[in-house]
Image 1: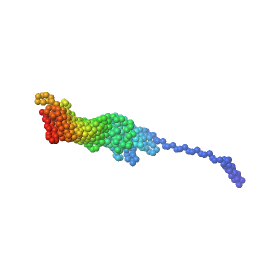
Image 2: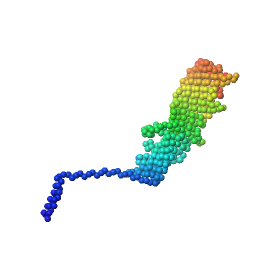
Image 3: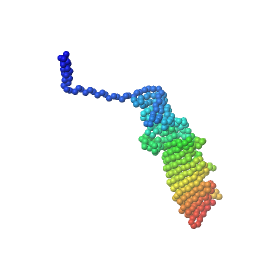
Image 4: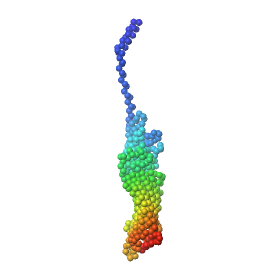
Amino acid sequence: MGRYANVALGLVLALAGCNGGKKEPAKPKPAAQEAEPAQRIGTGGISVTSRDDKRVDVWKANAKTAQVKLAPDGSVTAQMQGVTGDVYEKGLPAAKFSAKKGYAEQKTQALRLQDSVQLNDVSGHNRIKGNRLEWLPTIKMIQLSGSVNFMGSRYNTSTMETIWSSPDLKDIGTPHSFKNDPKMKLLIAPLLTSMALAQGTFSDDAQNMRLTFTTWRATRVSDSVTHFVVTGSPAIGSWKSQGLVFRARSIDGDLYQTAGGKSVLSKANLAGQVRAEMTRTEGGVRRNSVLTSEKADFSGDEKTGTMNLSGAVVATSALANGLQWMQMTGTAGTFKLKIGATQPLDSAEIAGPVTLRLISKRKNKAGALETTDMTATGRKLTFNSGAQEIELSGGVIVTGKGPDLMGRMEGERFRVILDPQGFVKEVYAEGNPGQATGRQP
């Protein structure tokens, strides 16, 4: 037995020695394990909900049919047909959307809809229609594009290419109107690079108010007040019941909606080539009143208004038949407006240097047409339509021609008294010492 054992042991050693001390060939490394492929599923009804980093709902999309891709981490991507859903704000439903087709990516918050897209606020009173909708996660806004219209309980827009909206539809506008918003300023530039400016309009259902613009933003402040900002070359705003037409590079103001649905301008700031126009017709004769400056602010209602102007102020009031023309200029001025009055410029105070130019034509007792043409300069000018009086003060010089009008007058104070129709009636100049008086027939 011992001999067989030794033989067996020698055999084992011999087999071991056959390697000549060489290492065994290295075993091949196992192939890297492939990532688990996403599962693709065709399904009937499906709901996809996207949440932010704090697990707060951002949007939820429902589809009648969908092709779904389920990633290993459980996130869902879906191509959808027959889409409805909700957009959330602070975790609560803020608006509802619908479209024929859509794409949803749960993890990245990507949501894109197309064909017959509609977005409604939760009240159902305000809606936006377009060809495409996209959720913009970086600025938490909704973009609608392609023949877009906003239709609300108060206002409507013309058809535009693109509108941005907050999830609750309380803050809406053209994309470029948000570029100076402190909440978006650093994020918005890349989104605007491919977007062109285009003219649009914003009006109320009563057809009392109309804004024309290249950029526009409207923010609902309360049930009756809407804040707006428009820009253009120029931007134009008109309010029929107030008899106002404003033109400027930018208009920033508040609209108050009356019980009858009219939108009345309650305040506004205007900048850049400002022009305010007021037109009244009485007895078949139209009076045009125009204020121009570089900056202006307005406050008022359907009865009265106040405008403060600065920077090369010019105020002109004229009858369309050419019988009256008055112009006042200065460097700053405050104007009181009387809505609906024959002369809408109720009163004015203008700082100088100031100028006054008056041209009036009327028939004398013999039936001949007489013309008064007068120019006056000074440091301050006041105008009072109710008192039918214009007054200049501070180194006043008056020149002109007309019946019984002196060729030149100088003094510290100069007054023109108008008759009820606005024609020159009396002219006074006061000096130191003494007083000079000129009278018109």
